[in-house]
Image (tube, rainbow, N blue to C red; front, top):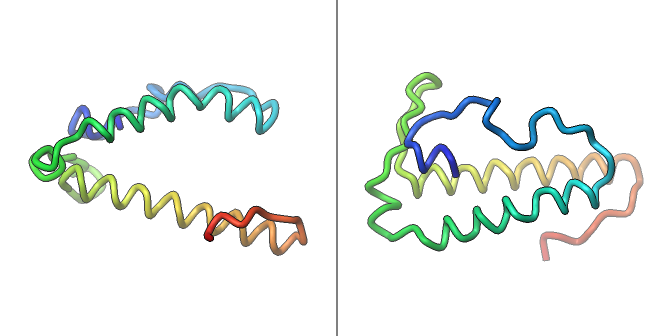
Length: 101
């Protein structure tokens, strides 16, 4: 969200999740809930024109993309990691949620 808002990469230090000690999944979900809501509201407020006209300049890692392309790639990236996590759980024989149905 911050990269789309600023049109560029943002430093890792600006993350509210940095430096937090992990306690439990429930605690992490509760902490993340307001940020998740803010992100959903941000996405809902973007117009079709903004999805093509806003550019995210990440030249330092080799690309400049439109906001729409950037956001779709971010969602795909997160889905890949969710699949990896499910694979790890499957490998360990742990019951896993049916998130793909």
